[in-house]
Length: 148
Image 1 (tube, rainbow, N blue to C red):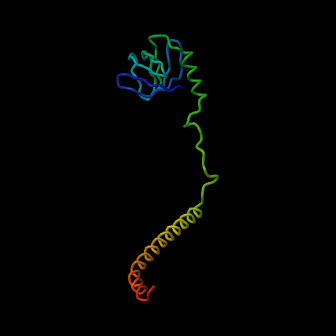
Image 2: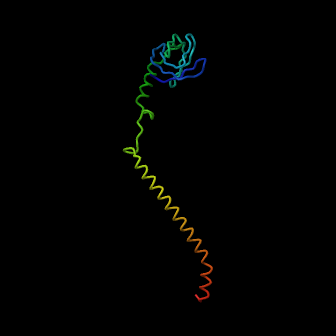
Image 3: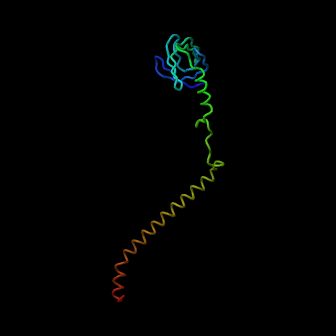
């Protein structure tokens, strides 16, 4: 099964090439073209103009106007099978095992504790700065009065 694109009177659609010969193709398509209509089939760099000979359900038989480069299409299909495809590769899980509900709960509690601690430190530094600024002028007056 080779993926391809087909253009007919209703527009472009995705199809699968099921069988290829030197003068025709068998395809599977959700939108079927009417027998006798002309379609354009694109697979890779190849453009095949063909006439729909028969149509049965989702399958259709096409007769090409020119010779179909069967060898090239088969070689392209084998090369595509050899190349790794991202969708076909399994997704690597970074964790060895999924975390349990208890582990998620403990992690969120630790994050909450760290956030509250950081807020407390910032508030304490702000209050210290305000108190220092409030007592700085009177302490400076006491220092000068004591001669220091």
